[in-house]
Length: 141
Image (cartoon, rainbow, N blue to C red):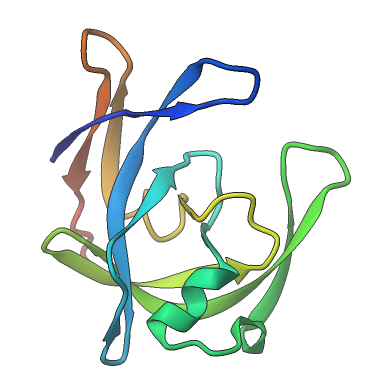
């Protein structure tokens, strides 16, 4: 599956090209409307804004298992709470441990656990239409 990068405005003017993918989350019989997530190879987990939790049937995201994680800024920490959901990408869907946080600066990040372990991602910033390609990996257990 090939996708073009999306242009997004940045502070101070200009634009950045980001690998953004339309996804959905599901839990039990609840399915969110499609929304955008940034593919982030630097993120350990799949992280979602707390605002998304009620849309997938989690009224209080803080009932999940607490995880405190750091980022690229020294000393910065973020509380997030794990919940089992299904990640839906086109016709693919699979169970992941999603982390919800009220401290997320953006809506959703797709990280190594839950996304990169399911897809080989090829980033290609060259050409007239820079983009990325996803190849599904089916692991034997």
